[in-house]
Length: 436
Image (cartoon, rainbow, N blue to C red; front, side, top):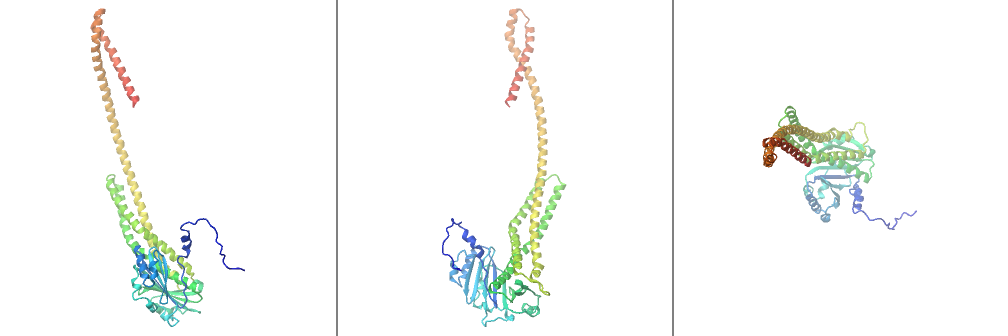
């Protein structure tokens, strides 16, 4: 069987410009391998502006000058003093992970699992100068343990007097012990390796790191949710007061609408400011859930699962943030409905005023029509008078010629002239009406 790769190049259509980058996205952040005994320290700092990207490159260049030319890289790998260093840029934070597999003496005892002297090879103060504010620091210590792990009571002193949680993970191939508290700013996980290979151990350590990091990123909106809950209560009370005034008074809609618009502006401003933060919390919470599923916990009698410990406070915090976001969105919809009701009543009131105005105009038009008819009647009399006067100049000589009475002849001309005037006025009115 020939297993050598073919060297023949396949002729394919022209590539989409972004195709290679999209295809490589699945391999953009591969897991690091790690063996036990070993340690992993991961530090996450908030990324508040794009200018910090260059600061990170400059900081990493202190260990490897090639990092200065990385530009817009999203992840880098470095070597320094026996440490493997992985830097990643995420949307809202940077993460720096340091891997060390063997102590100077070649072994790590459980009592020194969380000793940080292995980081002394870094330049003095290098970690403290990482750009951004630290949101999480996670230390994972892996110890080989072919048999059963020590009892929780034996391991608990490493974490202090606080209760710890411990459970089998990776389908029983390892046991993790933690208290999920920060000591000197670091959250610590102790992993007893029963049957993990290097790749599986690296994935397990990375999942524990991501659970802690994304847990803290998700909780960033918890103080905001607590503050917004109080503000939402005041805003809902203000809306209720406005609607009570709307229900009890038929006047002053303009003032009510102005107050309602001001309230809507405040709520929409809060939605614009905090909506992305609450959405990010839901996304980070989903990542924590997926990482917990990937750990593949095995329930051990007498041990509290890590997922159960997280759910005790982490899940209610996420639900509180989600409830705040939903309450905020619902208040916005209620304000929109109230504004629509107020606008509807204003439109009805305007319609009523318009109808009253139209009725008044109709009455005035009727009066003008009656006055016009009266004026037309007077006009017929006046025009008849002047028409008979003009006709008299022609009728008087005619009466003398035929020997008729002038007065009777002029009297007979009056109805004829009046009839002609009325007929002409009616024709003029009909012509004007048809022109309109």
